[in-house]
Length: 92
Image (cartoon, rainbow, N blue to C red; front, side, top):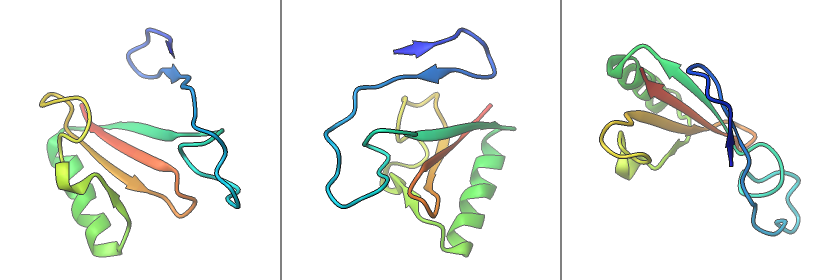
């Protein structure tokens, strides 16, 4: 369920899988799933991807980049932060 109809922010609630044994956090479990940020266009997404590759930051869905989720109109980069939180950068 997604709440809000504001162009700059929204909140989504999802049903999670069962708790993961032995882990204090997993993005598919209870808690924060991911953070998304709108950036200024596709060039910004590409520059962020290059930075992440150079810095050894874990990329998610890279085999489907830049249209991993949402079809051809959703140009985005997905990375994983050190706490395994998904961070999404979407071209405006």
